[in-house]
Structure formats: structure tokens, C-alpha cells
Amino acid sequence: MLLDTPVVGRALLQAVEAKPMPHGTLSVFYIFHFYLFGLIAIVSALLFVTRKSPVAAALWLVNTMFCLAALYVLLDAQFIGAIQVLVYAGAIMVVFLFVIMLLNLGRGEGKTDTRGLGWKLTAGAVGIALLAEIFTLTRASTPLSLTLPQGFTAQQVDATGAVAPVAVPLFNQYLLAFEVTSVLLLAAIVGAVVLGKQRGETDAE
Amino acid sequence: MLSEALFFSAVLFVIGVFGVLIRRNAIIVFMCVELMLNAVNLSFIAFAQAYGAAGQVFVFIVMTVAAAEAAVGLAIIIALFRHRQTVNLQNINLLKG
Image (tube, rainbow over all chains, first blue to last red; front, side, top):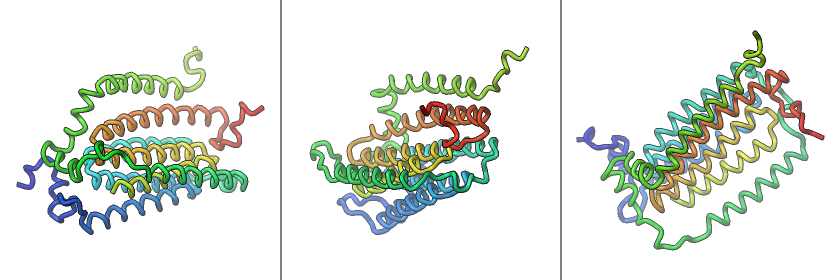
């Protein structure tokens, strides 16, 4: 019975009552894990920014991405959570690690790697301003008519599986954007090959 | 959990901005940009839960753009390294007047 459900992860979460309750209340289990993964993500991001060695930084960033995938699952976006692990943590970060390895940058560059006090103060000021802006936005209220009833997304996932809520709008409403994406990827492939080619490889003969 | 998710997203985004401003290693600056994209994705997912699944489609497309950007950006970094033997942004100042 458990394996018959479209999303086994969903069923497992249900088994421990992590699902948002239909009455609009969340279980303590759910809230605890939400905060846990959020805090781990933030701490890993801070460690990522402060590490000297690029390899250590990349691995902390992978940790942040895993925590974000967990948050996606808690927010009823199981498919995107899986894609996050596969594409971001699995593919993009591996490319970063490959480049670090290829250029032999594993050691870090010591003191010249961070900018001076002036830049740090500027960064702090920009950071505080951005945080203030974003928190103001967070407090803004949106019209109730736009808001889905609590637990609606979870019910949708239960009814149609985790992929359908993404796939249906992607291949109907946003089909053009999806097709244009293929052109973007082609351009990226050609660009990466052209840029990565050894200089003078073609006019060597 | 919308406001909590937005809070985490905002903090992660600001950490990314901070990293871009204070680091000089081109690869780490680039990874900070990825962190900022991830933070915005978290916002999209949180909004998708509250306002409908279209937000998840946007995340899908953002991930595609991030993959393309990583491929091209890292190729640029490799080309720069061949040219200058460093990825320290202090030494890559051809456009500085």
C-alpha cells in the first residue's frame, strides 16, 4: 500500500504525522525540522563564505543545498527537492569542484583572498539595507483571494503525485519558456566549448 | 511557514551578497552567486505553496539558467586562468582606468 502511493516520501512523512494538518495547524515535528534545516542552511552558508580553501567552501555550499532540498520537501515541492539534489548538489557543484581541481586552487590564497575593511563595511551596510528591504516585503499582506487554502498543495500532491503540479503548467502555460530554454542550453554548450578551447588550437597548423 | 521560509531566504541571499562583495577568489564569488539563486528559489517554493504551483515552474527555469551560467562562467574562469595564471580578482583588472 505504501509503495502504491505516487510519492513514497510523502507517505513516510504522513506515517510520522509531519504533514500539515487539514485544520491549519502544523505538527511540532514539522516545525522543528523546518527550523532545524533552515538554521543548518544558514550556518553552512556562513561557513561557506568564510572558508579560505575553495574546496571546503564548495562542500559547505553543497551542505546548504541539501538543507534547501529538505526545506523544499517540507514545503510540498518534492520533485523540485529531488531536482535540487540532482542538478545543484550533484551536477553544478561537481563542475565547480572539477574546475578547482583542474586549476589546482585547493590551497586557497591566504590573506589576499578577502578584501579590506572598507569593502567589509560596505558589504555590511549593503547587507543590512537588503535585509531591511526584504523584511519589509515579508510583512506586506497579499489579498486573501489569491491565497490557497492551507494544505491545498499537499492535497494536490497526494491526489496527482509530485511531478504533475510542476509538469502541467510547464507544458501548457509555460511551454514557450520551456522551449526557449533549449536554445539557452545550446548557446551555453557552444559558449563553454568555445571559451574552454585552448588558445591557438585552430591556427596551429 | 511562508514567513519563516522568506526569512531564511532573505538571510541566505544577504550572505551571498556579502560573499560577492568581500571575497576576491573568482570561483568563490561565482559560488556566492549560486547561493543567491538558491535563496531566491526558496522564496519561489514558499510562495508556490501558498499561491499555486507556478512558482515551482519558475524554480525549474531558474535551475536551467543556473546550469547554463555555471558552464559558461567556469569556462570564462578557465580562460582567465590560462591568461593570467591566477583567479584572484585583484590581478584581473584589465578594464581599470
